[in-house]
Image (cartoon, rainbow, N blue to C red; front, side):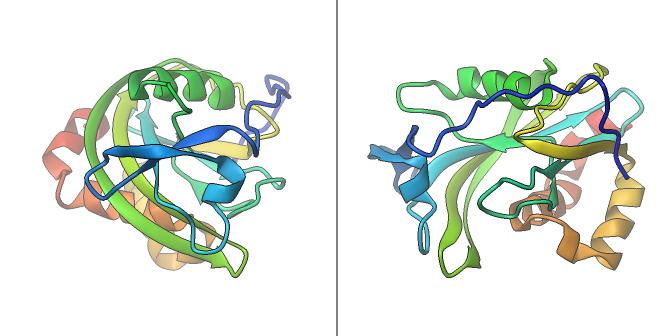
Length: 194
């Protein structure tokens, strides 16, 4: 399904000891905790983001998470997802991470945020207050091999069919976000998928 190739990069951009931002249900900052500790057990609620980058043909950029990922390795997911670090504004974090992980720049528009908890196994989970952004870029991804195993552009119709026929291939947060984009935010999505 993907396009790994010569434009790949190999750079460490994520660290277990980087401090993430702990929040309450209202997204008020409570303190900081290492990324590793935030994802142990049932997870500790922390601030995160998910980016959905479309090209001008209305296709969504998907990535397959790298094999070395602690949670949901080799699952397919949205264009980019990560966390702002301690002291980092969200608008800085989303652009930093899109460049570090995918190797592209895009104009990104904030859409909504939501809380979710998804258990991977007994040792780890995601428990996030996640900000969701939409953006457009026709740049060719230059994926970071430590973060991304594979990638592809996919039409919304084909993605809808994939999520019905093979939902087990996709991360839980991506499925939640895409369902909400296709229903509650369908009008906003039309600006990107035409």
